[in-house]
Amino acid sequence: MALYLLIQVGAVLSKIIPRSWRYLVGTAVGDLVYWGWPAKRRVLLANMATVLRSSPNDPAVQRLARKSMRNYIKYLVEFLELPTLSSSDEVIAGMKINGLEHLQTALDRGKGVILASAHFGTIEVGGLRLADFTDFHAVYDTFSPPYLDQLIRRKRLEKGIHLVPASDVRQMIRVLRSSGTLIVLFDRPVELDKGVPVSFFGRPTAVPAGPAVLALRTGATIVPVYMFRQPDRSFESVVFPCIEAVETGDRDADTARIMQRLMDTMQTVVAERPDQWYMFRPVWPSEPTQLPDGRHTATGDTATG
Image (tube, rainbow, N blue to C red; front, side):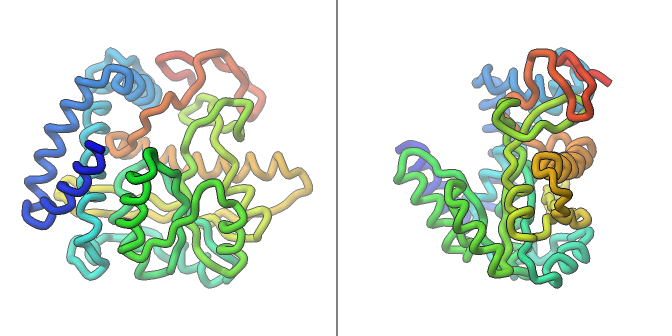
């Protein structure tokens, strides 16, 4: 109930307090959460150590981990502001989109588009900007308790964001087969035997096969897209070239190839702006395992080449 009230109060305050002030509060809250939640701090440090190919004790790693938590809280600040925003607001309309032609190419094909993104930068604000180009559905995970889930869903629906539960694969297929657009976050790490094996920053991990399976089944085009916040509080988006679901007769290999290409685009943006990546789950396993190309590596707090 406390989180429910916080969201409601935050939404009201977002109409009164300037965003710059709310970001300052978000920075302070981010520091409190970072230092007050040791378990998540350790995860952030381990993940950032791999990105920087260093140790969790490295001051640069610790600095980026703390900035990541700050940016996550700023993302929540933006979510609270969602009911008051529209694509006509200056902060939304002024968002620079690099690679917009790739999205347009995918839309022109008329076979459905999967906008694949990650826990990176700003999702809600970017969604409002993308709504200027396509009417989309967003795949979402449910929250607990139910009244909190209903509140979050309502705030997104109020902005015209159509929602599809992550468990409703049939609805996702219907959207794509009707030439619709689906937004999916693909970077949630899973156990190696429960996902698609991929290499990320030179180390093996596994992610759900969702985007690849949907594309192979429907013929939809995958478009990797990431949205992030600039130091001047403006927003920017980068759209990568389309990933087509080409079938070779080996479904497992086709799925792995598509997901690896997605992870490669994510590695590019995370390497450039690691402070914008907020992943609070361990991304890499702790035991020696095998990379997708057959090489073996031992994983730990630091990355291997």
